[in-house]
Length: 264
Image (tube, rainbow, N blue to C red):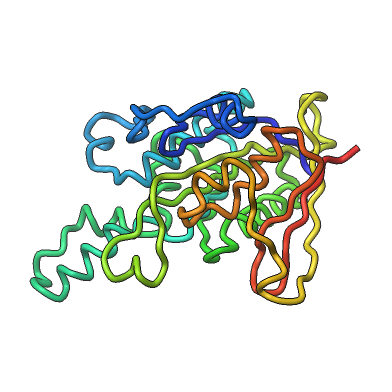
């Protein structure tokens, strides 16, 4: 079990959790002006150099920490992404083919999978442990499991950040993704002191599934809108949080699902 102390959200047309929650409830609309997150955490020079996926991850993480009144400098974190910065990866692959001596060190350091978590820790001066992971369609569920493992191992609170952007080049044919989508949660040990009593308490259970087809496609409003983004498998949980639904199931890998429900 864990309590949800804070939620952050940024997607194309929904630049905050408040907007996303209203949209999920059927009472809100898309904001056509929200084209790119600001990443206001970073100094101007770093902001210009940071790829859009980094800005995406940092914006949702900042929102969640503010909502939870959590200090980012001491908060352990888990960053999960299917692709990381796939646009830069595609650019570097093309450069290696056409002119390998022109590989840019700046682009290279932005291509690594822990780029977003690195910008986060540098921006906040955070010395707490941070993990960056990927598990294809199960990336979000495995991020949840990692965060819960941190809590079980004694961390009173953990920041979980999930994000993906646009696929590019030949890689887009193998693993397509469109639009920008990120969300973040500050999860807390239910028994930790100082945890808000009114924070939603969730229970998590890994359950087996019989086949790849046994997990039905989600049909909530958020999933319909962003189903073509690689991080869409996380959306049933955020639809559940937005609408106060009792439970949801998300993809956790080839033979398993993560069942999440509101704890009594």
